[in-house]
Length: 308
Image (cartoon, rainbow, N blue to C red; front, side, top):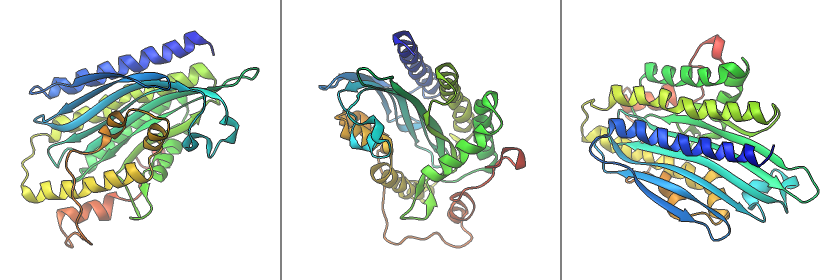
């Protein structure tokens, strides 16, 4: 790995941000992403893009960041003490889309690259990322499409990759205090370097490139589904779970805040409106109960060929 490799990762990430924003704006014709370029005092900066108040997207953000410094924060070194006291670079694209219509799922994607260096020693580098889906009124065909696309992203890299990273996603996006998954999962991977730089970089690119293929067909299919205040209220209640996960468990949020990142860019993942209700439970047999009974638990969506 050399400086050219790092530059190529950065160029891919900037291009990915452009392509994702263009694809979403192709559907959301009433408003556009605004862009903020920012700098971090400790080193580096980023390009934040946020779209608010759209007909389809109530609020969404697609962020690029490239930060560096003399020491990784505690969230990065707690499980990997060998990274302590190393200079670092971290770059990535992170996005969250909160649609207006309760029948369109919330979606999240992230791809990232880290390098930790120390004079006289080999650099330690790795890739991470994935994408996951959080429906409110789920359709099984949409969830199957999402996971089929995730499996396609993994197929060139071996038959065991999708099952392994699908399970990691189920395990990671799990709210222990609620005993439920955040949504229906997808892919999650971290600390990836065992394949060598070129193959690991290719996998990260495949994951990033498949996000729009996974999400846009669902958005197109469900964006005009009629809904009432009841469905909207349930969407806002379930958005609260998204907030709980991001503030309590999410590594990216913790890393960003602990490393002195730009707070507005880190917290753009939050929904614009969310509700909490005391001890709420869905009525038995209701449409809302389907989410709890059939979707908020790990499940093999693709049959034995794609089981986790």
